[in-house]
Length: 437
Image (cartoon, rainbow, N blue to C red; front, side, top):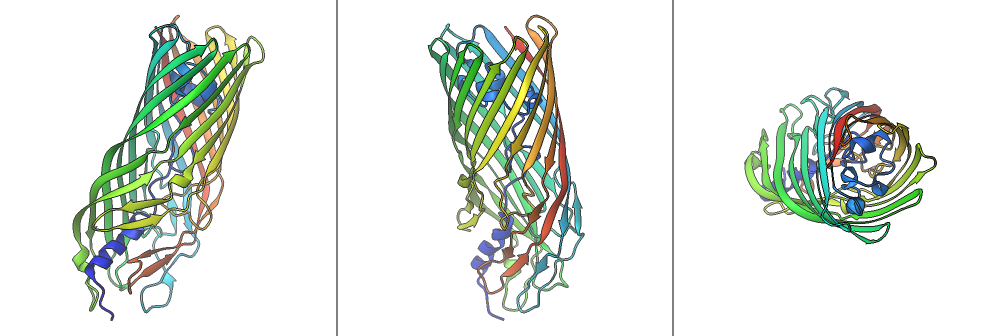
């Protein structure tokens, strides 16, 4: 058998590992939009045009022109369900005919339940100048495939946790017109694992895990107009380039003559770079009557920024992701039953940036509909309780991204992925409180 260098094999094993960074239960790909209980109740249809602390994540101008102080906290319990099914995935070991990948053909509910907290506060320093602070977790999830899953070579256990700290300042440049800017300090902690096939089907699988963490910066800017029955908002949130310092740990590889796979077992320090998407939001709120407010919002996501995961020395490989830019559209209503009680409802259509031919089991994402309902009740003059429920229905989609272990070497082992995301949906329960002071 042709001899293969240890260095080439080591770099090649990581090409499967970094095949995807995340997935989520609600917004497209690995973005979570549950940053406001009030917003969840109307399916996030009016956040960029609304005022107050609860809208600061979407628009740093949301505190412009306010008086006094405003705070909001919330927590969402995200409960996804679905099946990732094997339709005939094959593995092609060197010198052997394509063979079934084996393993359990159905992975039920691979995306774990998640609890997502958020909070924000804003305060008017002068009648024109205000300061704000939002703390969110916009990219967070956990997936867990069993060791005997058919998807084990492309995904095993994956965890992503982010904390975004967004201080902001807003200024009312004219009556009804406000602008705002913010910095986004974002911490990421990630762990991605998958199994590696040894060169004989009689040998047990090896395993590899990439772990890393780091702080990086982005920025946000926005504009709002509040006048008469209409409120209009426009905002931009930058892409953030994340560089994670971490390790790659490989175990269980077994050498065969001429191929020193076992030399790659161990832990190596490395870095991983990737970018989150930029985001443009445009929305309007229209007070149709004293009680009824209509909301609409359109979001454009620059997922093309998530074009690759780049691993530094000693690996020096770039793993293409193939994501495309996407849209979401939402409409909703707020209805004031009484001065102290408001009910909400909304519907959102959210496109996935994952595309046929590029979708893998680590990111079993697809287009979805989000149906929301919620309410707010003021229990005192300055304190209120918010609640919301969302049901998200995902479209069935192919899981069909071909990958390979030991890519680019004479022992390259393609995994011809052929699967389907089926019957996927999620229930999201949100509860929070708001305070005016």
